[in-house]
Length: 168
Image 1 (tube, one colour):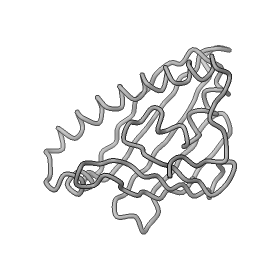
Image 2 (image 1 turned 30 degrees about the vertical axis):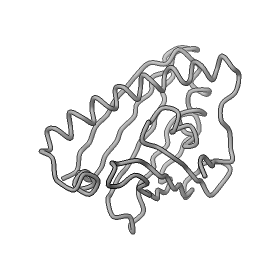
Image 3 (image 1 turned 120 degrees about the vertical axis):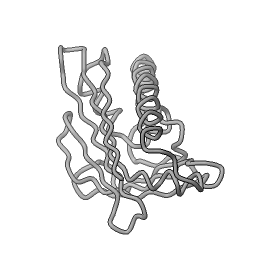
């Protein structure tokens, strides 16, 4: 079964700065607690860029490898990445920013994924409604952390920049 969850949050920053941070997978480990490391095959994201991300799913699967390809990219607007055909579990992520005012930006984060990954990670299936509730709550938490991370990085005048690589 495919789960499709979308979350939004308003960030009190310029949309270009928000997009730079939000579209940089190296920053994911700062706002998504399961992300352990990220590798990207190019200095700048564009259609066709390959991303490899290592994530903690559970004690049973502490370093799960996902490989994505950027399928849509418009600077300062949207980035869509989808797992490669060879990946065991399908996942698609959409990261979009919309300027509301000069210093207020709406972030829209959409996550679509095959819930069979939950059974893989835990060793047993959970009811889909529980996976949905957990994913929605986790996304809300991550978006709050993302908002705070962007504010901190802007205060310190330094985003993590390219080339993408995080971890060992």
